[in-house]
Image (cartoon, rainbow, N blue to C red; front, side, top):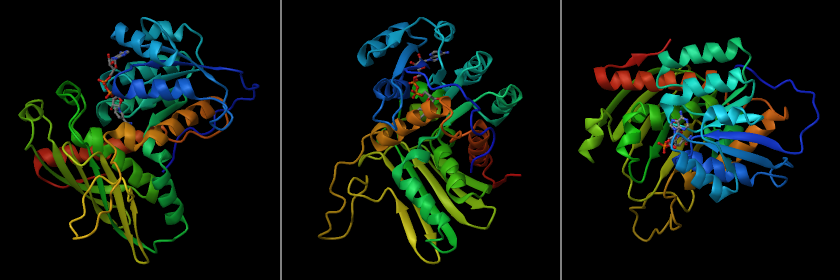
Length: 352
Ligand SMILES: NC(=O)c1ccc[n+]([C@@H]2O[C@H](COP(=O)([O-])OP(=O)(O)OC[C@H]3O[C@@H](n4cnc5c(N)ncnc54)[C@H](O)[C@@H]3O)[C@@H](O)[C@H]2O)c1
């Protein structure tokens, strides 16, 4: 579901080079750095990107910049002084509100990794700030660029599944991220399942109206000590009566497992069903899937992350609409908040 500001009105001729600042080069930022530095004519005839990097850990900015052939500066303020066309925010979640405001104040296009802020209450003032100033902010929900989800959307829109009655969404890491990251991630539903909530809204064009969530901790006790769970499941109802489950886990020894099964009156479709799917068959004599499963989100969505960065450059150039607005991201975060509330209260939560 897309909403909010659309095409960036821009009638200027396209520049020979797009200058981008990247704030934060941890797990995802280092990946974006590699993808951004490699963008060019091979990606829909884009101009090359000139990249400048900042990180609160200056040495990390320097190392990643050196690796991808970019420059580094000591702070995000210094990034904005470089005369950039766009700011990519891949710093930790607590920094997102301030960095988004800084980008909007500097009147540059902003790409912000999900989420806009730690929870919906903290996101709403940022959303208002962006909208009041006409800011251009693309949010990081990369599944919208994944070939499987895109094909599913086309099939759904063409009515290929008949009427849809249910779905099962799965997101499982091979192993948990560092506990330090989890402590500020907002919890499993906000960190992982938020991608499933976003893609369900985007694919179906429907709103999620109720969530009932459960969860547990059977792995590293430190995850429980920072207030998170390592396994969770949300039972979800859409506004047209479609029902489904959204499950997430931090331990899947088979690999990084992201799937979505959508069941309709005419057919059932599975996004993520290929030879690299991170599961094993119990059936005797069946060796499918036999490929090497993705080991991390970076492997699973390698092409999608690259396409997402290309889309941000296209947005800056005024070639396309915003593929994921802050309002979209806040809508998914709202569902994640409801799942977290349901987990804590043990009760279903209705969304307005
Ligand atoms: N879309 C996805 O698939 C996806 C995947 C992973 C993470 N994320 C999101 O990306 C963000 C970063 O996650 P991560 O796993 O890379 O975290 P990380 O902890 O590995 O890295 C965060 C980096 O940001 C830096 N940083 C923190 N505050 C900063 C500031 N004010 N200015 C500059 N740098 C700052 C830190 O020093 C660190 O290098 C999170 O918001 C997370 O939700 C999205």
